[in-house]
Image (cartoon, rainbow, N blue to C red):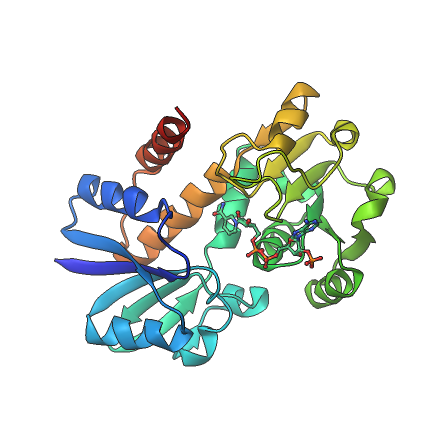
Length: 269
Ligand code: NAP
């Protein structure tokens, strides 16, 4: 049986084991995917080698710190500055980033082509970097909006895009809004990164948060008649890409989405 793992801290409430183990079953691959809490990034490498783990997902807080322990990283992981996927091949550990693929595939579910999008990305952390990379790599434009000016400006410089203060959202020239902050994530479900009156300015609103499935931001946007994309799409597609990298096979994306959706819906009832 092949072994795969999610490394992070915390990992107890992650949906990844449910989604990945369901996918392995349908793909007819004898494998087990397990969440492992690690406090140090170096533990990821130690455990992968000692337990013969063939592939790993990496989450908060190790996406950046794991890089120095890997033998190589992909171009996208290098440009984004974060690794969320590790694969072992002939004794070498390679880091990849599939979060940006998750954003790209999620945006592709909308009716507008990415190359024509002008996306205001709220936040300046790892999710924001993945979103900006996805938009720019596909010919769209990105504008970083962040609470802390210095961090937002630094990110905009590094990624070659514009910066605006989150307070100036009313004057930002964008048709798409992406929330890449934790605002609105369970249990803080009453929060949103932008005031309800602002969502009318956009034709598409995407959240990177998937718990809850409908954040306050998405609820406000839907009420305003704006097209919405849930963070569930990003989550499912970043995981599906990990499965492609690890196995070389096509994952059951619809089933993965169904499993996570059902779990989140049942959890709330
Ligand atoms: P991060 O590195 O901690 O960055 C968080 C950003 O949010 C920072 O720029 C921070 O602004 C901003 N922020 C935090 N609290 C805020 C507040 N009260 N008001 C305004 N801005 C605030 O986090 P991350 O790793 O990028 O993750 C962000 C979110 O992405 C997570 O909550 C997660 O749900 C989501 N995510 C989803 C997926 C998926 O597959 N769907 C994958 C990865 C991440 P400052 O710079 O001012 O502190």
